Length: 174
Image 1: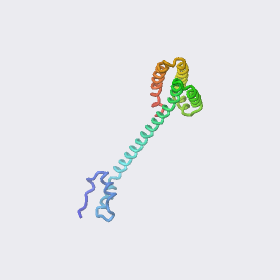
Image 2: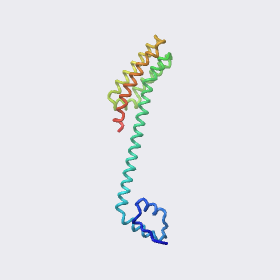
Image 3: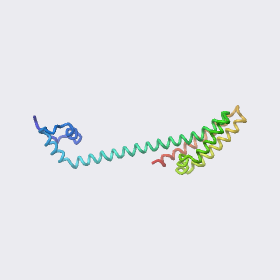
Image 4: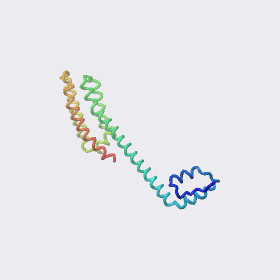
């Protein structure tokens, strides 16, 4: 069996050999000598790999945080849009119940508190959009033929303002 010159191996190749070599192999002592000679290089490589792993974990957490913020934003949006829409469709009883639930959630749910504290304009956005939506939904009961046309401008303007406000989520999550 011939002896191997491990000085020509890359660090990754040395680690592969170390995992697969037999302790009784005549090349094993040569491998240990080469690993000892490259101790600084191996340490630097491991530190680089550790840094990359930490960066990746931070990116994953950041993406997870943004996803959580987006889910919360969608939840608050459902509480904003669904009550007036249900009410405007002529389902007064269900609409009234959902409006009361949305108001209670807005007052007491910690999700809304996160946005009220993190996004300064969120409080105004929700109150103005919600109350104008409810008023339009109530007025649509008197103009049932045109109820959809009454709600479209409200939906569009609330959506645009909410979209602009949602752009600030990136700044609060990072």
